[in-house]
Image (cartoon, rainbow, N blue to C red; front, top):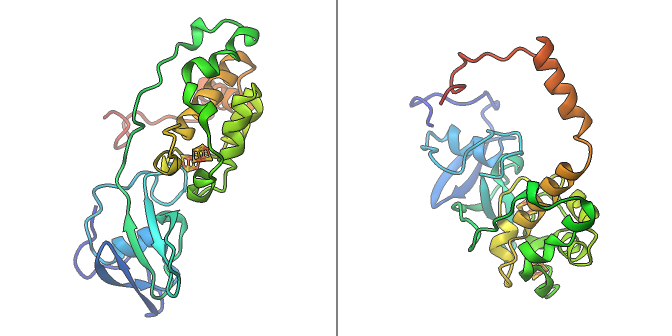
Length: 225
Ligand code: SF4
Ligand code: SF4
């Protein structure tokens, strides 16, 4: 998406901050996030966009190098405010190197299902404890710990550590053993929910939809892609 020429996202009182995003020198409105700065500059945003600022989709992956720092860090553009002298580069989407096929309905009860972690993710036991996944994660998840808990057979505890994962896949890019930690986490969370009671907030929301107190507008833009 792009803004009409001359139209800004908001009135920042005229204060701007010089940053560089994907090679474009931009004057970002004071207080803007990196993704807001990009849009305010009138540049087209056709990729790396999903939830538009809620920090839940993981699409706006960026590498950020702050002024005076040598090391670039991974971040989400919607959750990172522009700072003077920042250099930013969006990171493309990249899938895991191989798909992990599984059938939750065929895994049986929790006694047998927990043994499936090694069958589906045999590479997880090769974790070399490098900490690359932890350093890459913009959500501060203890990814390495979660991977190793899963290997130890503590699948539910491991899955819980991935609760705030947004599937940005930065840990996938960081892992030298091609473990695809986020996909392991997704598998663990799916397994946990298929073997235990559904989350209370999910049940409550479905009830609200069914009794009409949570209206669903099927004619809303984008509701019927
Ligand atoms: S665990 Fe991986 S995919 Fe999930 S938020 Fe962290 S880096 Fe992104
Ligand atoms: S990046 Fe891969 S090998 Fe390194 S600690 Fe994380 S899961 Fe283990």
